[in-house]
Length: 268
Image (cartoon, rainbow, N blue to C red; front, side, top):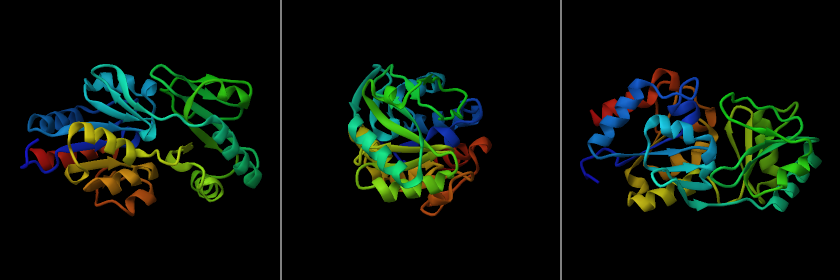
């Protein structure tokens, strides 16, 4: 680690941040990250996706470092193909939380990310999958969601928008689980101590780099804890208002190579 570096660690969200359409990383972003690494900075992916849903992206990047996945629940060593850390969610608690939310607003549609390196995303009745690049398994009954360990529950409501669903769920079960909005149609429940900041802090400790030497890029409310932990938070132009409110800087959108614009300024 070089003290002259503007930031020794570059933490990037994926969807809406580093990734463009089709789960791709632009040539300009590839080059900007390579330039930063060449002068001594390290890059770490911090994503809401669990490991099985992000492995193809990491492969395309030629990524060999640590990756924080599953909204902070997993720290994945890509070079060795192993989980250094993983937090599962109590399935009984998940059912209780869903019951309390439904008592307040009626039926919600649910899905889960199972725990493990080769686990599946199970989609319950009614849940609509909006991301075309992520494999899923549809199950006929909600009870089928709990057949194996999970690391999070994903929620949708037939009428409420994401912000309203997040607000109500947080008010009803925020003392039981962490409620966050990770993207369009993606409201999630996880254990109280799991978020991107916790996962990033754990991975950064392995690398020997503090938050005071970290720059973070994101676009959604689930990136707010990561921005609070890092020295400098950069929001994409396409970011949710909740993240824009706490960002230190706003760059161009993910489709306009917003990350590359900032990295070229800092590490050229």
